[in-house]
Image (cartoon, rainbow, N blue to C red; front, side):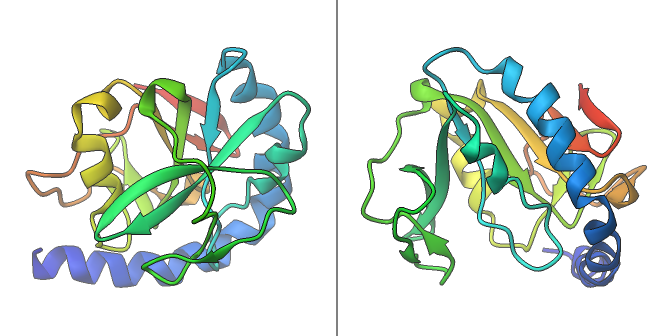
Length: 182
């Protein structure tokens, strides 16, 4: 990882936290109207457990007929496991709340993969925390075709982020402005 990418990550970590709270409710409302209709009847929506400053879309799990999964980090790999509100969560290998003892989904069961970010660019490059979990997941052949969307405030979009050869562009992004697909 380049020094430039580390510096950009630190800068956006501070910027993101201040802009997200104001836009949270608007983004959740739009997500219900714009993202959920893209799912087929038996497909799962992969969310994430939000950290400080990340958009919280867990409210989508309250919608009827929506199947939700959360990420579980294990041995430097990311897997998606089923989750229903109220099910217990336990720390995964990264220490994040996760449904570690629930069913692990196969990519064929997934309709949309949503991922948080510190920043993103118009090419679909996502700046995360630097662990590479989403890149490793999406590099697997079965995951390449899954619609993958970053979720953030529009204030987190930049023209171009530094990218590494292993960075896989996302198919689009979702902000308070709505869904943009590449």
